[in-house]
Amino acid sequence: MSELKRGLYVQFGKRTLDILLVATLLPLVGPIIVICAAAIYFDSRGSILYRQWRCGQNARPFRIFKLRTMVSGADKQGPRLTASGDSRITKVGRILRKTKLDELPQLLNVLRGDMSLVGPRPELPEFVSMYTPQERKIFEVKPGITGPASLIYVDEERLLAGSENREEFYLKRVMRDKLMVDLTYCRKICLLSDLALLLRTATTLFNVFRRQNFGKSQYCCDARSKVHDQGALQPITEAPRSGLSLVKQTSEKGAQEPLVVKP
Image 1 (spheres, rainbow, N blue to C red):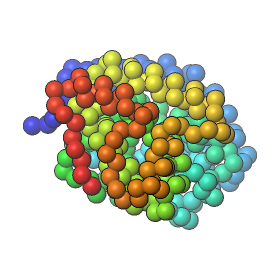
Image 2 (cartoon, rainbow, N blue to C red):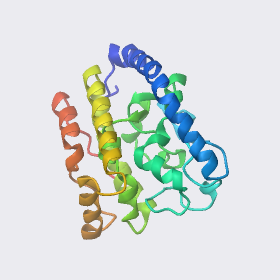
Image 3 (cartoon, rainbow, N blue to C red):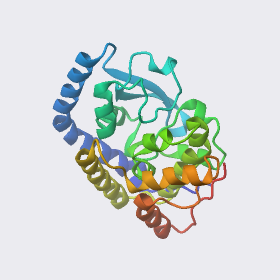
Image 4 (cartoon, rainbow, N blue to C red):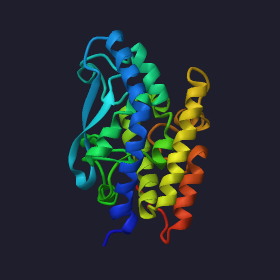
């Protein structure tokens, strides 16, 4: 039997909340998307929207929408993972990635039913093939635009820039830690926790706007220090400061202890 939460909110209320909030947000963010699209058009050659295959609920593949932040054909010109300072990122793309504005088109994914506003981030199919049976339980819920792991790793690109082998570091440390955090959230999904995460996301994005070109999150500094001090292949054994409250809330409210996911 599944360990993840199955209640009325998960089955019906979560989708209702998604539709109501997206219907409210689209008129507000629509002009922002248009401005960003114009900036992309005049900044570099290529399409305005970028679509990429990801794995959603029940491991079903779908195309995720983003505003293009890299040069055309970037996925064929370098590594699959992008870190801060990547030469393939355009001038406008740097701003969009820092402020997370490139994620706004995923509201369309929510309307289509591919995603939810809150949930685990959808992963690349080639990375999903490396999930353990325990980690594959994540497919029992819809992926989300934001979630506990997304907030903890809000500076993921800076973290990856500090590792010598970014893909190996991501697969053996970052991805495993994100899955553990998101699985903990999935065990006790409820309306209040989703609303709290949406509010936390809005606060985090506001702080990102404020610091844009200077400063780093406490988590990123701590995590990069661990990379250099402990080596990129050792597992993460403690929750970062910025995400500790979220992990603690979900584990304390649930009847079960968080999963221990091994690489």
